[in-house]
Length: 538
Image (tube, rainbow, N blue to C red):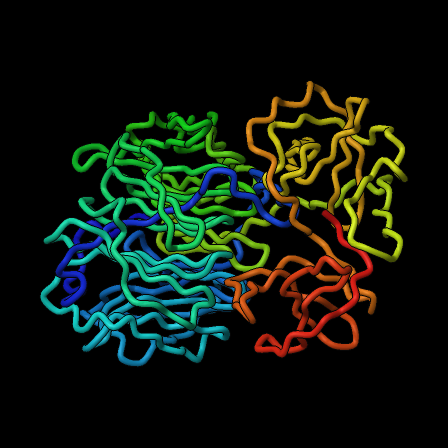
């Protein structure tokens, strides 16, 4: 999520945006996922991977997808330009044909997106290789003479475009489940009178949209909930499975950025670590500014500038839950030498930080810690052939701790009453299943189980126990199916649930049936067929 441009674009919606636009957001109460949640990045795991003749600035748009990165510059010489890169270091020009104005970029799964204007329409361009762009017009007509603010986000629940007209309060939104099929504009009723620049972010469970002092959440780009923010003008937003975070900034005066997080229905100010001397850039909050924030794994990353009396210093922070932001040490292999961190992007398993280093631009890469449990952990037992079943680790795993930790809340991944989200050293494990009588949990991850002894009692459950969704399915053919990444297409009234492999032929799993079979297909367009299921992990 990037901070919106403050100087304002020169064009926007003519027909639809004349009515006005606003925001959209995500994080529905009780939302749950279908797989283990990965841990947030760890400070100190960053390194410089390259220098650039010229890199992104705080006015540019940068994002990544699984195999690439896209960087859009709104107006050099009055003509926007777009670059793509496989690694964030080597860039090539790749401006979509007809682009006259850039409004935003987004990426998720196997595709990257650019939102911009042509002479006749607002268009979303999609690429999977960083070279060829597929355009999808939104049917707005020309944006000349209009003053809009646009936002673009892509995530597991699809691709979302939002827009607000500076001349008329209100918010419009367009949503696509797969990035290729777009509906018409819709007015978001909860933000009908909102004014100000719009910001948007995709989360693991939907979307967040901020306009002015209004923050909205949606699980699907259609149903919206007002999260009751009202603490200040929203500049940046991000969200995990359970937490929404907001950064506010005064309209004028000092560069101070204030961080907030939502927990138990209340907004609270977050602690932002200034760093520890003799690190450079250890300054009071009024001399710090956060330029960019995004969710990574199950936590968050943020980047900005500390305005030291001697010189500015680029700083980056990481947070597990949005309540406390820990600064990444500059001298210990972090973003050493940076004068600013202007943009963040994720691509594959890496996070990329773009910033200024003395007289040149540079790129730093961060990779999260290994998520593999200790080698002494037990393998996950394979259920006997037959009907789908709930996995009980205590039938085959001895309740002897191999590590110690603490469980912070119920699981965000599944709704089982014995499932928790637990911390072991610097790693978050979800799903962890509690023993019925002993102070231990069995944390399932990557085909293994590690038994964790609890340093504190299990927390009181606050969420309503919901449907326990499968997170791994084994077919009779031996194929193993796992939760799908990226926007989910639909076939025969079913959303795509899992992709299976690496058997004799790739399969797509659309729905589990009560008779021990699953609806699958060998092509994403069908036809559907029934396939025998060997086992289901829930």
